[in-house]
Structures are given as structure tokens and as C-alpha cells.
Image (cartoon, rainbow, N blue to C red; front, side):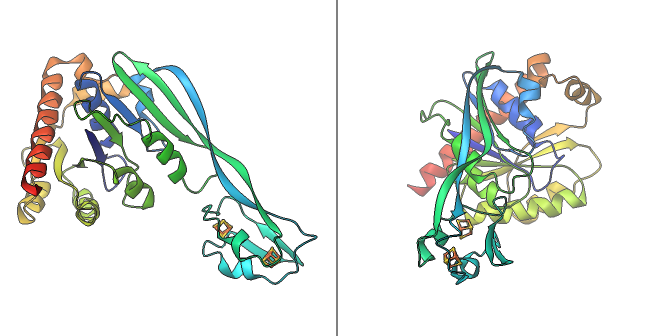
Amino acid sequence: MNIAVLSGKGGTGKTFVSVNLAAAAAGSRYLDCDVEEPNGRLFFKPVITKQETVCVKVPVVDHVQCTGCRRCVDFCRFNALAYISGQVLVFTQLCHSCGGCPLVCPTGAISEEDKVIGTVEMGKSEDTTVVTGIMDPGEESGVAIIDQVLRHASNKSTEATIIDCPPGSSCTVMEGIKDADYCLLVAEPTLLSVHNLGMVWELVKTFNKPFGVVINKAVDNVHVVEDFCATHNINVLAKIPFDFKLADFCAKGLIACREDPAYLELFSGLLRCIVEEAQHETTANN
Ligand code: SF4
Ligand code: SF4
């Protein structure tokens, strides 16, 4: 079962929740798709067993064959090509590897070559398989890296794969949730977090995925997330308390549910709840 963990903004506790969910599930897989800041490995400290390079195709222009017609420049919607001083220039960081410019070039002046944009690391931390996507500095899009990380999801319905998605609601997040069986939205009790929760809520609705909310840093006297969820009929699956002990674990790079039985129980309960919710949705849709 693939569980995507999302948050509308960084710093909400998405990686904290993802890491603890994976650590609470026996024989799970943790896939870090937050390729710009893959921090889950700082907690798991996996023993690396394998590394893969991630490449994308980018165009190369043969300036002898190029007639300067600029069709490729007009075609590229990502502004990755420019015609300057009588030459087509390629800005590879902006290229989305759509493969279109070689097709529109009337003289065959454009070919493609591989460009390395990052790596995927595989490793083990106790019985958790840890897969981490790492985007090279200066690259614009991590979609290809996320795709390669997601190939390591378990295909057994009895094994939990936890997908730590990038923050926000951009195309990289969509890539992370497209094959998810369930989406867990992490929010904290602030108005900004509620605003961002609204954005990821719209996203998971668009993808027609079953979902629920977990409130991180929950406090007794602030109910903005609960109020939002009640208004929109969204299920709150669990509340993780505002606890200095958790901050201490995080600061030391420790996984709460490996350190404290109370947190192991909390995250095991959250996992059971997710599985029940996902099964309920599947039954309801059949
Ligand atoms: S491959 Fe696509 S995105 Fe890249 S430069 Fe060509 S047209 Fe633009
Ligand atoms: S489409 Fe081909 S010939 Fe025309 S400017 Fe681009 S590379 Fe040159």
C-alpha cells in the first residue's frame, strides 16, 4: 500500500510524520521524494547499498545545419531556447525534456544527449528500506528523479510504502501522489498552515484520492485545523501533541517511535487508521 504524505508548506512536520510512519510499520519502504531537501536520511541514517544516476534528455544544436529559422525557439514553452547573436542557445536547466524541439526543426540540426540531474540512493535502516532522491544543485525540475524513486515502491498490498512528497502543490507533488492509495495531509494549528492545507486538499480531490489529515504540534486551545476539517467534512486521523521531547528527538536526528513506546503506539495507530480508511474507500467504490 502506497501512502503519500503531503503538506502545503515546508516545516509543517511532513518528514517527521513520514519517517515515523515508516519506522512504525514492519518491513516498510520509505521513499524520499522531497528531492530538493531529502532530510529523511538524516533520521534513518541508512547503510547505503546501491546508487543510481538520474539522467534526462536535453537538446544539442548543430550550428552548421541550423538555418536560424527560430521554429525551435518559438516552440519551446519553457523558454529553454534563445536565438542570440546568430546562434541557438540551450539553457538546459530550463529544459523539461519534452523532446519537441528536435521534431520541429526542419533541418535536423537538433539532437539529444543525456544530462545528469541527480542520484537515487538505496539503503537499509533496521528493517526499513530507505530510498532517497537527491537533485543536483542548480537544477530546476526533480520530476525525473521522483519517477525513479517511485519505481522502488512495493507492489505488495501488505507492505507499507511511505512517500515523503515535496512541500506545496506543484507538479512535483502531483508526481509523488499519482500512484498513491492514500494521501495523508499534515497541518499544524496556524492560519498559514490551514491556508496551505486548503491547497493540498484541492489537489488530492482533483486526483480523486482518499485522504485524511494529521495535526502536528497540536495544542488544546487552538482549533483552526479542526474547524477547517469540520467545515469541509475532512477526517482528522490523529493529533501529534506539541511536545518538547519531540523537538529534542528531531534536534538529535532520532526517530521518536524508535525511542519512545508512546510514540510507537501513536504512529502504529495512525497507520492502522490509514489502512482501514483506504480499505473502506476501496469497498465503497466497488
Ligand atoms: S526538449 Fe522541450 S523543453 Fe527542452 S528545449 Fe526542447 S522544446 Fe524546450
Ligand atoms: S529549428 Fe532547427 S534550424 Fe531552426 S533555429 Fe532551431 S535549430 Fe536552427
